[in-house]
Image (cartoon, rainbow, N blue to C red; front, side):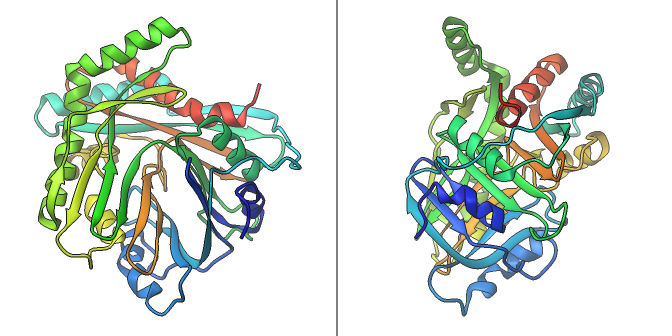
Length: 377
């Protein structure tokens, strides 16, 4: 059984890696994709893909934000070790030199998109819309996925560090999804389900007094608490037909190195233990934390206003075993890596009262999670 430090080396061989403060899971690769093509179809076929597999075989990977797009779920053996992923002391870090940096869209165009979303909200078309933007970094040499994963784990010990091959990892220029997600979509253990949706955010400050002031202001913000409430209400409404109890207390603060968030710890007990973690993903994803509210109306605004292809960014990333247990995070604080191109994505929830310039700053703060791991100073 490999030590957590070896997980970064396993990425070289196309392994899927998930690591948090308690454990590190590695699905050795490369492995075949679950049949079905689209994320939605792969979710539907997950249980069948595991039916005749021996113990220790999981479905693991990512489904995209738009479930009609191609998914990246693979079936194969996996091992889990205690403790977080730690850097291999013998690894040779190869810092990449960035030759070009390009925001897409530009901050000005993103602010204009926020204003358009606010106009749709004011007209009553939608209550909340999450809009994303990206920063593309082109390096002189290929980005090292193992180095990015190790840096993300070291800098974000409370997050779930992930590395998922989106394409065939043996293919030249194949894409990877890497990141350090602070948001638990769901964890299912038998009848027990835990979720921790995040919504309502503010960039952190390096000055301790100002940082605390921002945290207090976030807790007291009517705008941010409304944004958060849309998410929690949708999650609870989705869970109620599937669960005999659902508990959602008042939100609390959650801190990452770059952003303060409002978070709610939602717990539930399933009516029927044949409801698997993947069934719950299919019911919940995408939550208003990454899409908006109402779901269909927000998706329409995103299609018309947003200028980026999200891919597996803001998707559901995780694993499920043959018992239906599993753990899935929301694919945020993430980037897509393909050869010399690193595409970092970040999004912000827009509700009545949102300020376009503040949303530009918030997305920049969120993208710093990957940016600071990639461009080490």
